[in-house]
Length: 197
Image (cartoon, rainbow, N blue to C red; front, side, top):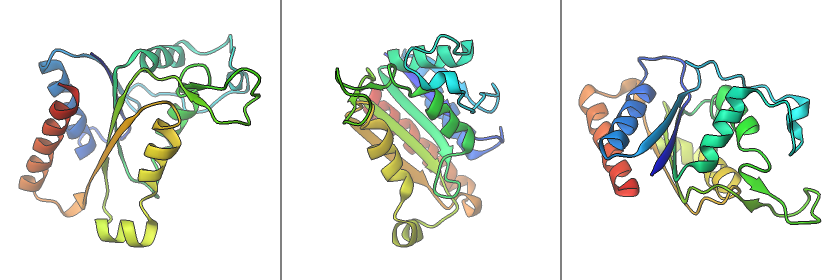
């Protein structure tokens, strides 16, 4: 299977990077073809340009075109990022704006100018999102209503045609022990094997 793995965290020593290394290692060990992108390391440009707003954009930068091609051909998707203000980091939001675009990730039926319900185009049937947080799960649910759950399940992947969406948040990372983090990475490996074997 072709797997797209997207990481958005600026610190290479972060637990997000440890999660990404576990995901990529597990997928490669089980003979998947992996498209891995560390958005900060490759300095992905997050700003959407005016020409890119159109479906038939002719001036799309080569890096963005490459991401579009890979996500369109992926059989599965894994996204890894921290919870910042109930949202992904800005670089990942920019990646969504530029890569999960009309004609690549979704489209509209003939005659629909964009006001109707889109048709998802992504080939991937399963997406997995790993988040880290320093907010206790109870507070995330009671006070904030877990906006990342709504974003990834309802606003992004369902919109783009992905049928199975799984998300796991690891918290509270800042006070976690080495043993807890090792156990969490074991859980990451198991979830990847369960979903993509």
